[in-house]
Each structure stands twice: as structure tokens, then as C-alpha cells.
Length: 264
Image (cartoon, rainbow, N blue to C red; front, top):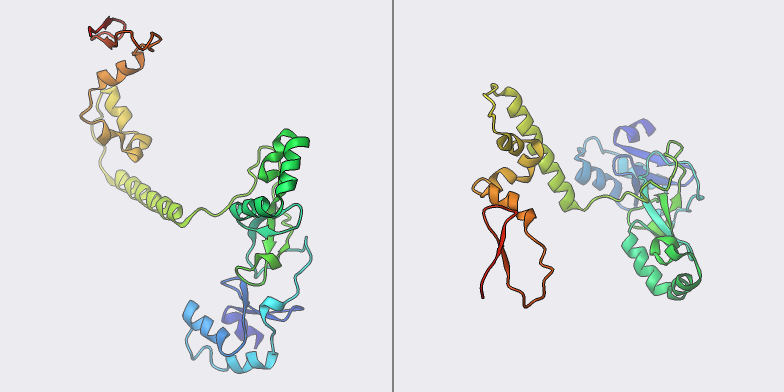
């Protein structure tokens, strides 16, 4: 039966009795037909392949995953549980994968400690990050229950240095969608460019600059196609008006080094 569980993407965990989904990387509730229904709805496994699974699950009498004992901090990573990047409060140990949540917690639960450190501690300690244990790798039996998590030790983790970013959090969904779309469009452009016949290059250095990858991706070629470029070039040479507010305004002539005062 263990081989059948593995073929269905399930793992019977021990010594903590739990049924883990290998693909989703969390423990499933085993009451009723939840395990079988999860496989059908989330992973498209047929009823024929799931036949007899519910009866076997019921014989195991698995407890609610929310009640499973938490493993010790510093444990080895469980191969079938997801690893979360998070942080913890230095004072009460509250853990979260969101710095925003921890910041709100610090302001609400430990305002006096923060004010004290501002006055008597290191000049940089008033930053909330100074009150947080960052760079924690966490695992938990269930999703959304980070309070009952434990830290795991990643042996291949790069050593921390002062130049290393604190914690890398997953980008928002909108950013991920934009990045994937940008990557797809870039790959499409490169594939089309590779199949096109080489054309005669222009000798105009400005045009060459506008067809570089950076200019193309940012849309500068379209933005400045009808722009007076000589005017743009002369813009940085406009004089800084050090005169009083009552002084006459200044304007440039055709030469960026010649300036005349306009009458009132």
C-alpha cells in the first residue's frame, strides 16, 4: 500500500502520524474523504486510481494535522514540507513570513522596548529590523499556521555577510505576472530577430542608440520619435536662477551659452 500511496503523491509520515501531499507539501486532514477528494480536485487523479484509499486512510486513525507536535528548532528539513522564509520577534518569539505583520506586532506589543532602544542603544537599533530575528527558514505541518512552525537548518546555505540581503520574500502576484510577460515578450523578440535576415545598418549614431535592448524595452524609441532632440540636448545647460524672485526671467537663445533677459 505504501507504493500505491507514493504513486498517488502521498507520504505516510512517521513518527508524527500524518498523511502528506508530496506535491503541495503539507499535511492533509484525514477525516471523511478529504484525502481522496484532494487528489481528485487538486491533482486530477481518477476515481479508479483512488479506489480503496478512503478505507485505508480510516484504518490509520490519523489525528488532525493542527494538533501534531511541533519539531525542535534547528531540525533537518523535512523533504515533503515546504520551506518558508520568515522572521521572528526577538522578545516574544512571534513568527511570520511578513515583515509588515511583525512591524505591526512590534508597535502594538512592545512599544516601550522600541522607545527604550531608541534612547539608549545603538543609533541603528530603532529600526524594527533590529528587533527581529531575520533569515529564518521555517517549516510547518499545515498552511497558514506559521505560529506552530519550527526552524530548519539548511546545510548548503550561503554564509551571511553584511552585504547580503536580509530575507528574500516572494514577489507580489502582479509583479510575477509582469515579469513573466516581459520575459515571454523578450524571448519572442529574440527568436524573431534570429530568424530575420540581416539588414543594412544605419550610420546615424542616435538611431543605433535607440534600437538597443534597453531603449526598446523601455519604449524610448516611440516616446522620442518626433521630439526636437537638439532642444533636449540643450536642456541641461539652462542656467540655475540664483537671482531674487523680482529679477527678470531668463531664457536661452539658439546657443546654450548665450542668455538674454526677457522684459516684463
